[in-house]
Amino acid sequence: MKLWTGRFSKEIDKKTNDFNSSISFDQRMYKEDITGSMAHATMLGATGINSAEDTEKILAGLQDILDDIESGKLQIDPEAEDIHTFTEGELTKRIGDAGKRLHTSRSRNDQVALDIRLTLRNEVDSLIPQLEELIKVLCKKAKDYSEAVMPGYTHMQRAQPIVFGHHLLAYAEMFMRDIDRLSDARKRMNYSPLGSGALAGTTYPIDREMTAKALGFDGACRNSLDGVSDRDFCIELANALSLVMVHLSRFSEEVILWCSWEFKFIELDDAFSTGSSIMPQKKNPDIAELVRGKSGRVFGDLMTLLTVMKGIPLAYNKDMQEDKEAIFDAFDTVRMCLTAFIPMIDTMKVIPENMRKAAAGGFINATDCADFLVGKGLPFRDAYKATGQLVALCIEKGLTLETLPIDEYKAVCDLFDEGVYEAINLEKCVNDRTCLGAPAPQNVRNMANALEAMLNEKD
Ligand code: ARG
Image 1 (cartoon, helix red, strand yellow):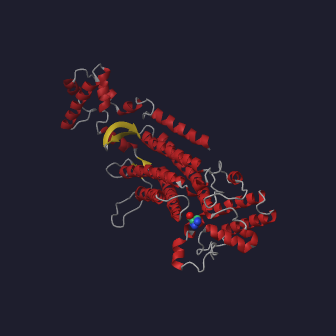
Image 2: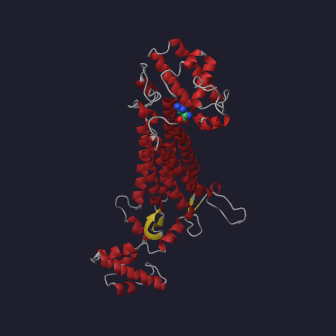
């Protein structure tokens, strides 16, 4: 039975009903819908719009419905149009006429706008701890491997020496920004649309501040048209979630490279890798690949939301029902990815010897070699050129800067002396990179501790 039967002379076509219905995905908001209705009912009682007696019945009835859904006693009807219709219909079934007074001065338009804000607020509040957990794992690992020298890359070419811990903390910074972005979007979203009505508020003496406060909002939306038709927060959150996926995807790509035989910087735990049905030697980084792949879904969700919203006039239009599947999918996907990704990182075996070997083979101390000459008074550009000649020489002779005899050095530039070997020692090269944000092991340990302290402060 539909809520809006008065004007209609026949029931909606069955297939059209399925098309029109949102119950399959908005039933997820049953708790928020009931909580919102309770705040609304309480306000209707407090302002004298509904009697105390009706208010009591409504509140008790809503509580029973909530309890019965949670205990499994009450099944949400898949034939209902949406969760709002279902709850109100069930209430009236249970308490009679009083149930019909719940919707006074309210529309499903402000109701759904409220429900989705409440739901997404909870989603943000449960996702942030997951991101914090990931950062904590990265900090722990960064401290464990604050001295593991590895090549840092640009253009996928070995560039300069860093330590593995420094590399991990770069990701920690990204996830810190993700937390910031989600919290920031949450702040802007935290205003109550309830009382905006269908679009133009109401003539009843409602108290919007009261319901806003009861539901934990920072205030009430200032404009009723905007209150019902704003979905900026869905787009902002989908954007923030897309960036989480960009970060997870880049990280996954590196994990995939690192556990290849070509790198072998890490090995994934058996619990987080899979075998091949034909090649017995294979151990595949499927989890990382799936995370990388699932980023596409979340970007798609963002694009869905932008496209749904871009052309609709004020105020509510049914197009907006499409918001929920997209934003819920984005949250569900990110949550699933983090749930698999965090323990995968936590349990991966790091192989510092292989990192050190890769660091030794790629002339990543060439900048430091040039800096040695700068220390002897040569202008940097000349030092750069001389070092370039040395690298070419090494390649020709199949040597490294470490193994090239001192006479060869001197033949290229007479400012060289035995001290150069100490200057290009990889451990020294990273140890001396102590400037703010650079990979010296002590810096890495300090930064990991600082990040942990920031997270603990938040808790
Ligand atoms: N199921 C609808 C949605 O998700 C609820 C609002 C319906 N309002 C309306 N006037 N048809 O947007």
